[in-house]
Length: 318
Image (cartoon, rainbow, N blue to C red; front, side):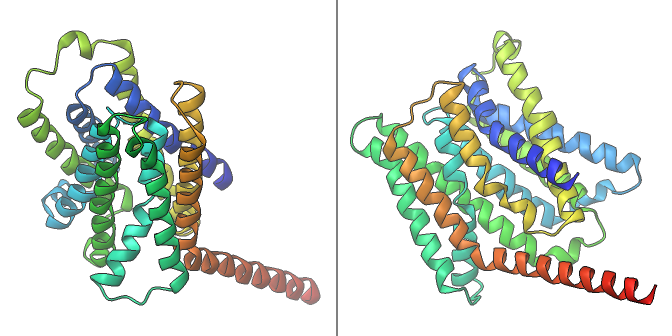
């Protein structure tokens, strides 16, 4: 069940980038689309958790969930949704995988944490991959907005990374609430911020005929039900069944799924330079997290040895 859940989660996260692209291309204003998605998904999850007596709505009044929501949801997805008007869904997905490198840099520069050299090398390799992805735009193969949009996605990952580091710093203050409830609360905060941004910048762009477009409705429903509710619930379920590291390895798989799906289904352009850039970024992401991955496999090996020894002792006693 763990492996099945992991495979489904990777597939869901890998398809959300294409779903965003389809909705934006169908005429949904990006900030409005993102705001509706996260606010509705967060609200449904909060009501569900409240009905099970596992959360209080007072969680929404905590400044911690407000700050986390502004980074994890607002900054990250305001950037991604806007950018996907000008770049392919696959490129958006691969650029979104740069988040761990920025988390590493924030930990090293701001928190003064000791970071392994191999992780710094991975971060630098990831930045080289970003440059390769942007290269077709710099060489004139794409519109100048391609380059700007790529940089905006990377900037959004700074917001994600800052919020991720902050959430780890305040984990003890939110210890009384479940991770699913915390995620629901931060999605609601990020959602209403996106809707306010839409109200300010997208007046006159929301039309009834657009909202009842089958592609737009399908995109919204998919992202609300599967993307935000299903994918994130599976993520936290996997954490409860395994550890915090294993589910996060979706970052190595889902961008590849998104890149291939965009090319196969949506006929998005994919040349060898972009493919090389995606490959280099993923190598950088793996190296950035190599120490964490080593500890994961070491813990698994230790548990396996202990389990085997316990079985031998049990057989001997019998």
